[in-house]
Image 1 (tube, rainbow, N blue to C red):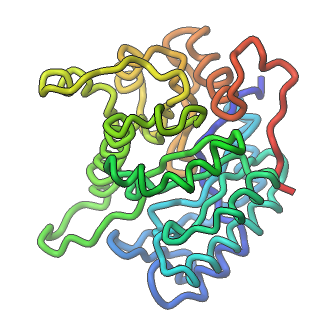
Image 2: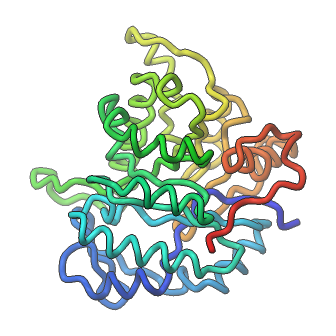
Image 3: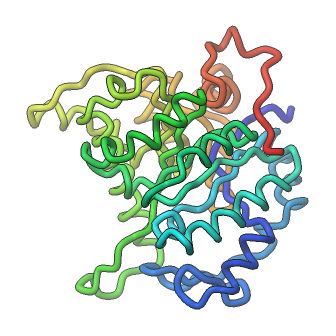
Length: 314
């Protein structure tokens, strides 16, 4: 049955690809080879960004809705304003034109963001706001982003915290290609998770729903260490979620043991990962693949979800 909602996918529409190919500074594309500031060149498989193939792949795995976002590790949100604005306009233009199977996340420049423009995007069918974890990596960073996050909160839309661009570390020497996703991205997500908790995110944003990608880098599993080192665990926030991307049975079991089942939601990171098809039995699988993603998107309790739909970018 095609009912699952995948909250975390990436697909590059044609206007964005064209803009990236026109650039001479990172991030840019040469053919289908991606060049970024800090990571080695990456050969993109064009089939991964073929709309029809992606829909077919999702349907084979029971995914009926795919929420697509700009890939924050590209660093687009952190470019100087004119460069960021041109690329983000191409993203939003292309995302609007995708078939209804896809639901897009909005993105904005992180320096002097256009708050009114974001409000318009969220009112125009974009399901929420993606923010790079690198811009939320401390309590002060969450405070600095406050005006931006409140736009999403007022609109009743979630915020998706996604790994951001890695920084250039000249003294690091040669590292394997998997280093940034495994080491750097996980560290970013952990810092953003702890930043939210240290700043008292729920008190600052009483109605905001937050989704942390990549299982928040498994940060919740370190709550015992938090307590051992003098911190306080304030309990489970029913509107702070983690997605399943990059993790399988072992990682997801650890997250569920700490957070419970109700705040773990399907996110595959497709085309870099596959949707989880079964976790901890039928009820848990339904919650992670269907019920919990619905709650991320619309904020309703499970019993209120029947008959609800999600906004469509127009």
